[in-house]
Amino acid sequence: MLSFAGTFVFVATSAPAADVGPAFYGDPPDEHHAWAVHDRNRPLPKPVTPGTFSTPDQPGKPPADAVVLFDGTDLSAWVTGRGQPAKWIVKDGYMQVNGGEIRTRREFGDCQVHVEWAAPAEVKGGGQGRGNSGVFLPGGLEIQVLDSYDNPTYADGGAGAYYGIHPPLVNALRPPGEYQVYDIVFRRPVYRDGQVLDWGYVTVFVNGVLVQDHTPLEGSGGHMGRTRPGPFPEKGSLRLQDHGHPIRFRNIWCRELPPRTSQGGTDGYLTPEAAMAKRREIAASIRADADTLKDPANPVPELLRRMESLVYESDPATLAAVDRLNAQYLQQIRTLPPAKLAQKQGELKHLRDVFRYLARWKILPATYGPRTDIDQIIRDQGWDKRKKG
Image (cartoon, rainbow, N blue to C red; front, side, top):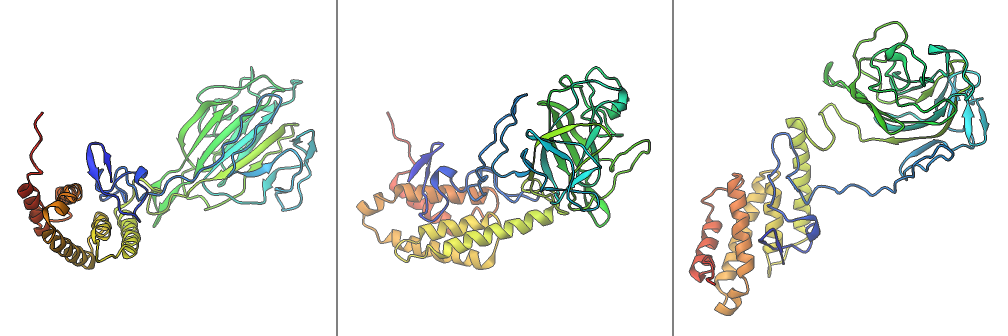
């Protein structure tokens, strides 16, 4: 037993850990949300050991759950456009453009991509003819690589541009010869029955500066021709462009992100169909846990879990079980001598609060019999009166 936000909370032994939060607390699930607010049944984020930041002289370390695509030693994660072993130069912890575009062997859907690149310190050429390459994401859209430091070119073709579609918000490049750091979040478009649910978007940081802010996808983009929004493949390779310039790359990694589905969302705002399907799944899990709590001598833990499952799904069998367990509990309470009954004060008050919660959200009726009985017991004992002084 513990006090939470001024409310007595009874914790069933097999329920989620007490420090995750109590049941019957925040707003319950609704048409678009499978979880209650502050839901203790909601899975906690898995821990991931973060990486370290890069410096101009030293690449950082990727986070623990990243797929490492280039660590400075070999090109085993890369092939040519025709699937042959990549032939780019590998030296001193970097790989350098040489002999055609390369792509990852592994394919990705929604993802977070980290790429570090450097244009030659010796400046040659101008505009698109200076330090040009590109990072191509699944579906073919290009985040432009270009030595844009003091090098004007068309706005939707500079470093950090969604090439041919959307210029970067700012030019955040360091001088040529220094490594530039791209951090990219890619979310592919989501369609259902030919209709768009989510246009998809790309977010890009260049050297820690936001340059693409949740930019909606308008197709793959490209040179001179305007592309149109449309479905992307579920997965695709990451590609690095050979534009004839000796660009160097280091410290490339990718984190796969939970996909959004045709139902919309991942674990937040859902379509009514997806929210209800998830709520049924959660309710079934809670009912399974309640099955492990059966104890004729103490029906309260099982009762609380079964009532908790009703928050997610109203199930006739569960309602019948709740009626039975309440009747069993009240029968036990009514046979207790005064001293023993006094020990149940906190438990009875908690059940009263649970019934109030369930009635407030119309999960159980306000006139539910066991609620009325427990309210009467509390009044008869004078436990509803505030102490003076």
